Amino acid sequence: MKEDSKMFIKAEGPQLTPDQARDLDDAYFTSRPLEYYSARIASLIAVAESGERNRSGDVGAAFLAALEIDDEAKILDFDGSDRRLQVATDSLAVRQHAAEALVRLYHSVAIGRVPGDTAACMWVAISDGPVAVRELANQAAERLASDDGRQTFWTLVLPSEAGEKPAPENDVALNVMGAWLQYAILLLQRDDVSVNVAGNKIKHGLAVRSRDDVRLVFTKQPPSSDGTMPLSAVSGPGAIDIFSSETLSYLVRPSRQNGRKQPLELTTLSLVPAMLLAETWMLAATHAAMFYIAATQHFAGRKASLPKYPSLPLGPTPQQLLGDSVIGMRFPVTTPPNGGPVDRFAGLASQLGFASLEIDFENKTSVELVNDTHTIESEKHTASPDEGKLSVSDDVPIAEPTKHSES
Image (cartoon, rainbow, N blue to C red; front, side, top):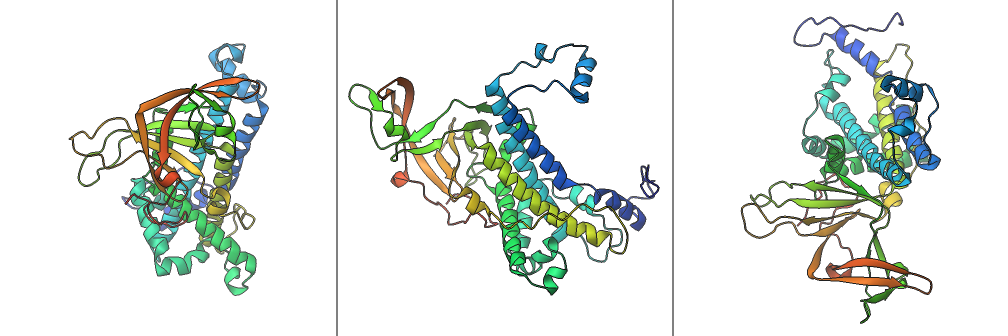
């Protein structure tokens, strides 16, 4: 063990002493969060592309030895579909993890730390921050939207020399990192489809259903009188893909609206692992820049093995990466517990807004998709967005740190 490291810290009272606070942050600020997320991203990409079990290595051998089993295939029985679903689900989980980590770090450096408090500890500030994620995100959004929050944000993510020697790339990186922080806040706040709930459902009980055999397409062409539909109707230029990759479904009990309990909802998210991992990297890079600045301030005047400052993230922004892509769909599966009208209708959420849907359950139709070479059986629900396309129900840009709710 290194001479300057502290394995044990003696409790000396209900509050930390300045020395204790320093020792704790000495340990915290020599961790490597960017490398952690890099390793998670790389491992998911490797798993997705390998397609086979890796039975070699010390961990695999020790795993088998612990269970007294000589062949991994005897117990780890899965196929390519299971692998794809695992990668997609874990990609969502790591994206949400990175988003919350970034918002909690920002909250700690911008709100939780008291200037001049010699016993202030960043590790404690992060650990003792708001328990409720919505409260955390709302406080962070309010701070970032304030005049002081905007004017001082650069000091949290760029080295001090950036203020002394302005450069165009610094301005670009500052705006990119600001946009990703705003997006991270929105991921925790958004409730038209409760994206953050999905991460919790994965962590707590795996109360989710992932699938790779669902496709949802909007088409203007109705079935023919013989019950067939040409394949081009759902694959041509006039078709709008809603779900075309892996999906994740989970049950949500929304918060009260208009003072009334809401019905149970089923939410389905579209999972595109490549995009989720790209989001994770940009969130992690922004977190790493903020972490590095806080670490250098903590170790000012002392030698330390600091994590590296990331390459300046010059893009893409969330809007450049994701555009107005579909996030997911929700619909109620019960009526309101105490009766009365439904406040939250079925609908689709995109990156820029929410569009209500009317699902005609009474006119469900089975059709055959046909082309020149084969026939595909499918089931269709007649569902059309308002005005035939997605629209923004609240005029809230993707990177705006305000609550994204319905009107």
